[in-house]
Length: 304
Image 1: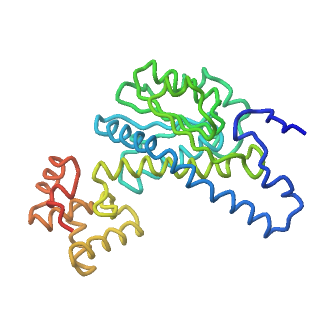
Image 2 (image 1 turned 120 degrees about the horizontal axis):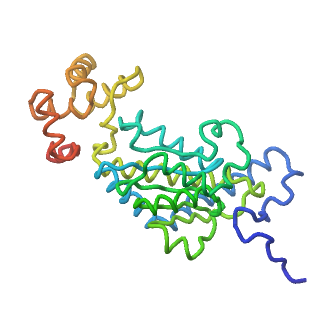
Image 3 (image 1 turned 60 degrees about the vertical axis):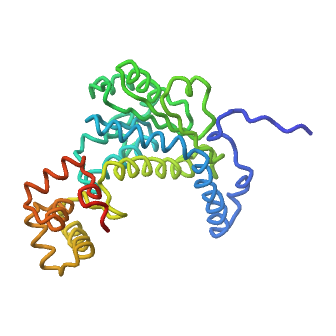
C-alpha cells in the first residue's frame, strides 16, 4: 500500500505517528510521549543558530541606533512575543518602548481568543502604522504555521516603511520568504503530540529563540558583566537583594556597605561598580559608562 501524502504540507498541521494512540495511554505514558517529543526542540534550534545569531546582530544594531524591536504574532505566537518584550524592563532595566509585542486582536487576545483577528493582513499593516515604524526599527514576525495573514501584513508594511524584518516559523519556509525578509528562522520541531497544538513544541521553540535573541542583544549592549545582570535597578525587594549580592560578590563588600553604595549610585548596580572600581562619584561614573557605550568591562579594563 502506498503511503498517503499529508493533506497539509505544513509540519505544524501534520499528525505525529508517535502519538496516534495517545488517548488510550495512562498518565505516565502520556507524559513520556510528550517528554520524548520535547527533546526534539533544542536540536531543531541548533540547526538554525546562524540565523538566530543574525537576528541578535540585527537587534543590537537596532538598539544602538535608537530603534525598537517589535514582535508581531497571533495566538500563542503573539502571546510569547508580548511575554518576551514585557520581561526586558525588569530584567535589564530597559525602556518599555525598546522591545514591544503586538498581538492580533489587541491586549484582550492575551487572555481570550479573538476569532478571525489573525486573518486580516490589513489589520497587521495598520498595527505597524499605528506604531509609526521607521527605518531604525526591526519588526520580527512570529507564526508557527508560517502562514498567518496578520503577521505577513505587518511585515510587508514594515518593509514598505523601511524597517528591517525577521520571521520565525516552525515549518519549511517558502522561497519568497527567504528573498523578502532580512532573516528567517525555521525551527523544524516536527508535528505536535496533539495535531496542530502549536503551544507545545512550536511554542517552546519560539520562547527559546525569542529569549536567545533578546538576551544575546542585551549581552552585546553591555548589560551583562561576566554572566551577571549588572544593568538592573533595585526597584523591588527581590531586585534590591540581587543587586546587593552582586556588589558583595564582585566588590568584596558586606551587606551594609553594598546597600549604601547602591543607594549612592541611585539604585544602579553598574554605576555602583564603576564608582567603587574607579574611585569616582556617581556623575563621573555615569559619564564613563556612556562613553563606553554602556559596556562595564570596557570601563573596568575587563577586570573580573
